Length: 477
Image 1: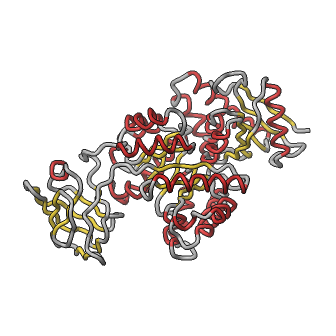
Image 2: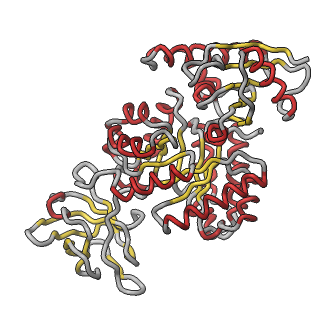
Image 3: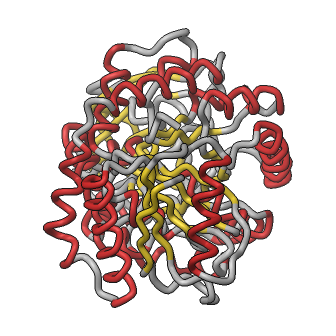
């Protein structure tokens, strides 16, 4: 495939039909996201089945990501049509159930008054309305509206993550994680991760049946970023809530720092939120959105995510085509050579275990060998996908092909930058594995006679992939 950056698309009312999903997959979707914050579990399981059918029909190895809701705090419902909250006006917050209006906002969070202090910021909904706490009393707290707007429905309430008493994952998250892991999704995203330890309860429930994605959307997570990246199987830069919890002007710089940390450690990273937001209703994106997508590609992200654009947008297929076109064009200008050069200098300080050092060293050697031999492709034979992810860190010019006998691994490799996943059989010897890897690449049309290819693998007789310790350079004839 010519495009190397992957596309994650959220399934919703606009794309529940199998025919629409098939068009989206053909247009370039690599990973489907099920947003468990909306809808019932049985509805998501039904969508998962339709996604699998559509992927089989198109012959594409599409992975599925189940996104857990995480802790949610909501206002009591505002009157029909909403109310205007004007900048400079004052409103009281009260803990408890019941409706909200322009004078009193009720919040379903028991520790509301205990967690907040004067000077804290409260944000409603997607961040359009922000308030500052000016007084906290026994029964309520008074806030001044800093940025006004119309409050409608029952919007979410965002409080400072540093003092918020709610923990992640919630009991509901663990129930959903068990159900989605049992259903066979490849990835489960954990919302509002504040420290690496937040992943452990979900990992215990999932028990190796799915990889975990840590969503970075709080300032607290940034303080434990390295540990989170090391603990997670993948990371999502969730810019929506991150832009509420941190100053907006910091978000582009945080995005770059998170992506850089993930790429250097071989952890797939997704850039998310409002990438082509205007296409929910418009036939084309704004120029600023095109630049945003391109800059995420320049930053080195593994994947770009579409949320409402495909879930509720008027033309989800057109959105995917547009995203794919922007990504492919941007990759021509991306400075991927710099990634390989920097990793070659720094990777020795990045790995603690001998196994990781062996894989890192061999993938580095493969990146240099591919460049020196002008190889057409690098073939990564892998059970877990780890060898392909290690190779993807170097963002090679050569085609990067991941071959695995595990169907779930084949689908999961769809998230990693540049990896073109192909299913293969299990082989008994290294020579047999190398030969069939090259033969499979030729039969699939990804490699031609006369090409030079590299084959990177671990010994096939191991029960699990301990390390990639085989590198062959093969002239296809």
